[in-house]
Image 1: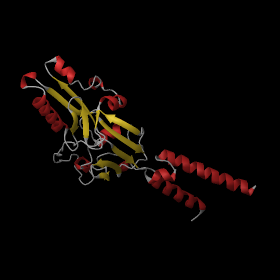
Image 2 (image 1 turned 90 degrees about the horizontal axis):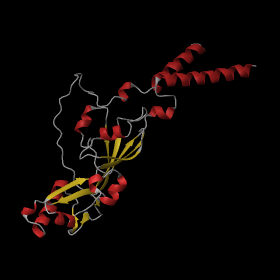
Image 3 (image 1 turned 120 degrees about the horizontal axis):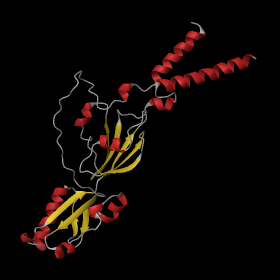
Image 4 (image 1 turned 90 degrees about the vertical axis):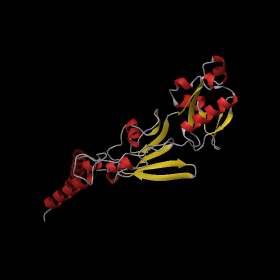
Length: 262
């Protein structure tokens, strides 16, 4: 085998292994079934239970404006538009799992759903301050789903999705999508629980990710997108990039050989 054959073989090998294949870029593939559609069982949506450091938005209204003013919790709740406003105007869950509300003082919310918190506040107000004729109306919501995403993502950082529920695909789309060198097969989710922090992985290349308990993100999730091995090789992620890199390397080697013979 002459030198030309060796260079050609080396060129083909590098071109093959350096590129990121299409199968590593396509989300939610049906990997184990040749059919175009996949019949999936309905995902059981468990309600989110409030944890420390969550921020709640609470509004209390009655038909009596004077009574409503007494329990007015925040002027900013109706127009929350930023994380800074939420921090100052919302109700932060402390380390003991409590929030402080005017008149009612401390209210235990840790481990409860927003609906359970609403019923508790409503019951206490009806028992202690109002009667049924006051037409009491209470709303309790999470102040958006705050998450942090880092690694091979186009817009890393902390973001908020203003919705009651959000998926990891929503979080990725909201952050500009995973880069071509991001490992979609092993996305790491670091999640806080009352007993501590746990780490989970989810394969976004497989449609079975839709059935994962980690497909829906929770407040304060940290999502990490690790790089593919192609990034560390530095030869490029597409065929054109790899070809350009190899040609540049071969040109450099050729120039060195020519100059060494002069």
